[in-house]
Image (tube, rainbow, N blue to C red; front, side):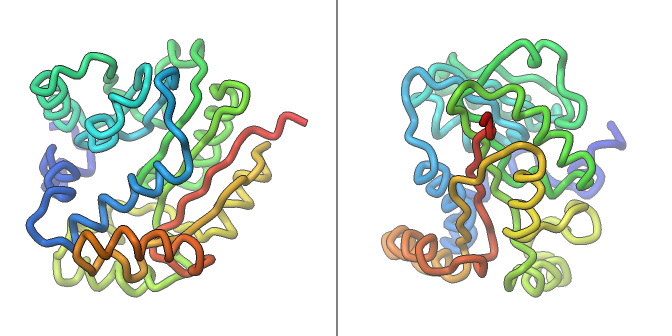
Length: 247
């Protein structure tokens, strides 16, 4: 077992994200599904899109969005999660997804020769240091096509999340986050400042998952849209959509 892989150290199964979005408890299911509903709000997918997913986990993005894109390159350092995803892709006969086992802090050299319409980081940047997060942002800026987008979704530490995270850890409702997984804390202000300071223009910043996720799915979707309009910087999760400032 690779001791560098925190998920293996603390016993997170390779299919964790996949199962979390398909749990019988709607609150947990909605919490994870809402992230990808927000991705759809922030990016109008086209069949010509070439996408880089920095941190696939067990592949919810790939399984949901492959049919809307030309191709997806998925990166994750957890070989077991990638093995699970490969099996799911094969089962569904999805052929336009390429998976690479790599750390987002040390991306393969061949990726530096490619350009993407969208680079996505969902629940990943908080798992690395702020110094490394800055380097990932700088690297991503160079890999985006003209009008290409970077979308980051991460916990918002200027919200009730600062209270919710330790409660979840104490009662083991989720794999331990605060002490083991989340190395960097961001607010909308600090994330926007980091990206703006490294050559990005912030097009959209929203927060969500303050209350929408606790309602049944048919209500959750309507409330999620409301959250993105009214919460400003108080939702438990934030989504930042930015493009390179080429002026």
